[in-house]
Amino acid sequence: MVYPVLDVVTIGPGTDAGADKVTLSFGGDGSIGWSAGYVDIAFRDGTDVPAPVSGKCLVQIDLSGVDTGDTWNGGSPVHLFPSGASAIVEVFSYPSDNHLAQTFIGTRTGTPVITVDAADPTDTLTVTVEASLR
Image (tube, rainbow, N blue to C red; front, side, top):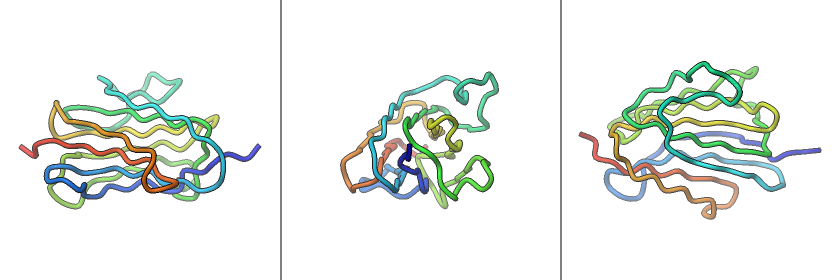
């Protein structure tokens, strides 16, 4: 069976002031399941070792029915940091394991507004983090 591929994870500015976004881009055909929620500790599925992501608030995104592409060099996690002042502290993404890929977002404040958009543009899942930078 062939699964859609999570090709790349990026951090970029949001459309509103004080907002930033994490974009997960996919290739291939098929359906992708996803869930997003706040967590106290970022654990990779099936382990009891915390992921090394920091922030006052942690958001976990689980993608089911996907594989990961060449971005994950030899199965290593992808660790991203924003290039300037951002509502996001860092993003830590694990390669897929049994067709489950996980991404954790650490935010600058403990009360961000998180919006997930799976519709626009096609082949992406966009997570917008809106928070004060203070």
